[in-house]
Length: 150
Ligand code: FES
Image: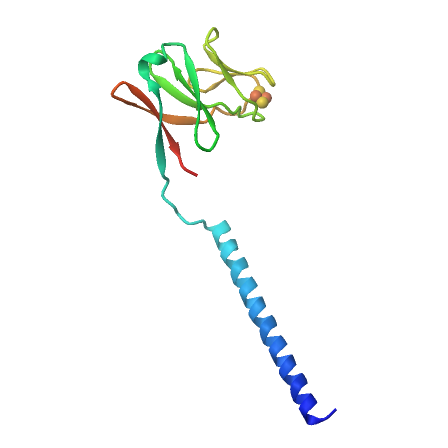
């Protein structure tokens, strides 16, 4: 092996070592960024959007109306007689769809006979916690539901 070949090899070794080092630093940097985000996520302010439902008069006492937000989440707005509630239609047991049963004044989950009262609290069956609740706004006789943007 003559000197020019040795120089080529040492240059090639140096270049490949340098590129490997840069690659390692870059991949550790990306991994560190994601690990940091996982351990201490940025403290982002929550952003809410109001969704129009209907005029108050269109949902009389004991009646419920289901809407779908832009993310496809179904929300049930119910006139309980003492106000309006906005609840997720996803059962907190195993995620089946609950629906309002006006005659029983309750939300019913047909999967395992779960019942929730008009405020979304568990009244019977296996669901471990209440239905997810949304804030209702009444503006000039119209119903709006405040939904967090995710
Ligand atoms: S999924 Fe609703 S009661 Fe089991």
